Image (cartoon, rainbow, N blue to C red; front, side):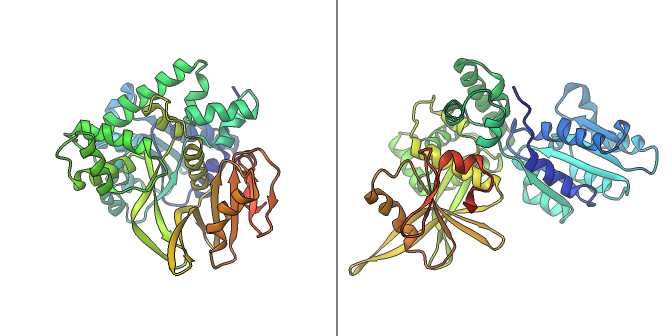
Length: 413
């Protein structure tokens, strides 16, 4: 297997090097946070002249380092490791395991020749209390599972085979090491049950395990569909899971969001330039985790493609919403949906996801919401077919899925 470079994230870390803040690398467990810092970033430091004894790395989830979970022991060890005036680089993996880690990290900020990098995997790490504690002294770098482009760069077969693997098993890096379908399936299922759900249940003291378990399955079945806690409550009632309040469902969704298992896309009224609070869409951070929850049965290409596009746009640094456009039909008004409204600084793109555009009528159908948007920002339809990009009579860009995902400049085509 080829090396996965993860250049985008490495460049983000390099840009923050020695900036006087705690670099906080966050993301779902097993997405590659630790590997990003060591060996990728560590090798970068060494290749640029940093001595190995000036890089202090502690894996806080390893048994041999259990003593460092005591904040006083950790603090003393780091301080005693500084022997001269040269810059030292500290890498602490899974920092949230240390009691009162906030005060330890804040103390490190007072050491001029110490540059600190930490990883964290759960809701405690990004709670409002932690943000308040750091008071702007932390610099977050969010890491996602492998994009299709990153996955393909390490895949030994052709694009078609790579896509088939990716849409089924997702982009958690270790999936590339497994050879058989049975191994990949078992890895994802075990990871979901024994790491992600178990961590959420224990950390949030969840009593209704049956509810959180069912909620994950419901969200997996309806990925990319509009929903809200009230709708979900009705689904629980129809499934004979009783006494589940809307507040409980809301709390459990927030736990899943905090653990980075899912992402929430809010609706945005394009013409009215305002957010619509409910309903929203939920996407899985990794499509393989979504699929394993459904025993790899519900493989709706359109929803899976939409989920992958959503994650790709997040990876590229965009704020992504679901667009709503109001159009007039005779004497009545109707709301139609734009799959993604993507914003980054002063740039905006409107994107539709479609499996194919076999006819002019189908093309016009997909174009319709885009044509009613009253601005001149670029409008794109991404199709699953492997086609050469082109522009419709109405000025809409049509881009094939493979080109969109593999070309980092595809939004400019």
